[in-house]
Image 1 (spheres, rainbow, N blue to C red):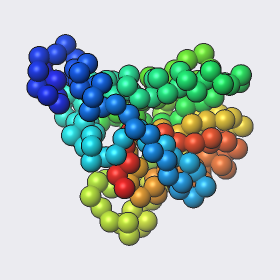
Image 2: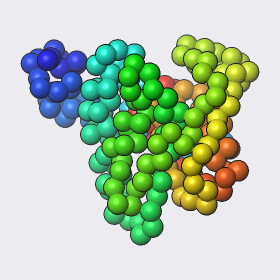
Image 3: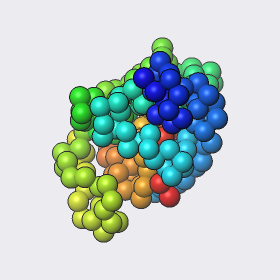
Length: 190
């Protein structure tokens, strides 16, 4: 196999050199409707890696991205908590044989951080890729939540563009008394 970034021979989808140079996270923060959203990268810096989710190697790329981002993040985060925190992936729908968001949430599993897989699923499967803000507003995701109530949680998605998906999920989770502390995304497309 070759590294998807530098094309050098590698046993994994992204070689160690590229992980330590071009894929070193640089966390940014946005606020969307009262929800703090932290992103590890700017979308334009890792767009080829994000869009790999539409290919057969996507699961390998997302596993490597999770090792660099969400896994170490949650390791540091749980050092400061005493009670369990739940990890809720936004629409862990399976495409191309896997769910890219489920890979990210699964990497965050520890004794104190518990993924609630497939708990927040969109009923509307329309694609937002390349669509306008008006289109996104007119075609809500229509999420259904089947997870626990009265919990603290972190929302996880791969990319934030307008923030409408995260905001819709956040509003729904409030109805179930889920205290969303913040959201994490791999990339911010702003």
